[in-house]
Image 1: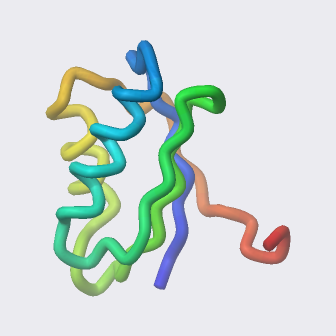
Image 2: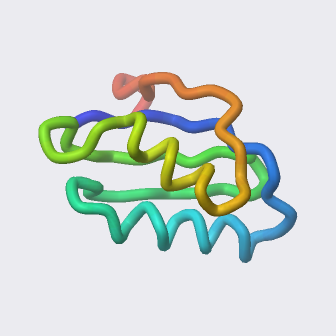
Length: 78
């Protein structure tokens, strides 16, 4: 499993965050998605053998949002 944090532009409200979270959670290989409007980011736990990170970017950007950056989550901070 891998966790990546995606910085997202274009969210205007919590409803946008909820929509992105719903789209991500429907993808095969995604174990968990947590999207924050306040932080303008999505934290996604996924199986890289089942879904590519680039595909997750496409899922987000296909819904009129823009991924500004992505980085591995610091798992030691949990």
